[in-house]
Length: 140
Ligand code: FES
Ligand code: FES
Image (cartoon, rainbow, N blue to C red; front, side):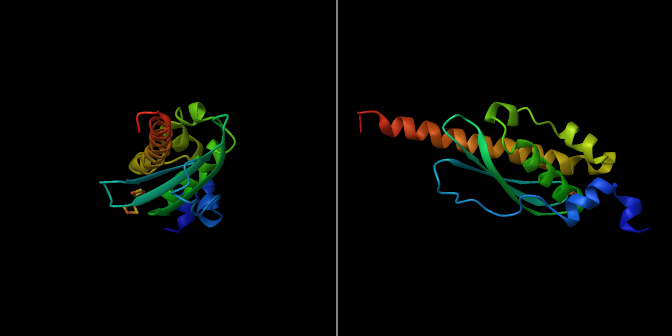
């Protein structure tokens, strides 16, 4: 079996031409970083977002150590959330990613990894914002 038989063309396209591969500065207060792993297979995904003053995602990057479906899922997720609000990004569902990429059931956890990574990046960003507010209080 060739890869073309195993994977949908969209997966292969994202795998061969992944969008938004790279890193953002994790110490930037506007950057949220999510690193998640899939217990089912040991794959790891890092996904980062950069958010502007209006809560809009102005950049999204990922690095994935994993299978073709995981790479395609994270590539697609960064493409979807780039230019959207953090609220919108929080609604990204793995089933939508899986549907878009026509992932077979055995590969559903790969798209779950992408949803988890987006959620983790959003939480990290929110945690940093809360920290900033606390630091701004006069009790320091
Ligand atoms: Fe490791 Fe999916 S099982 S790449
Ligand atoms: Fe584990 Fe794809 S992320 S097989």
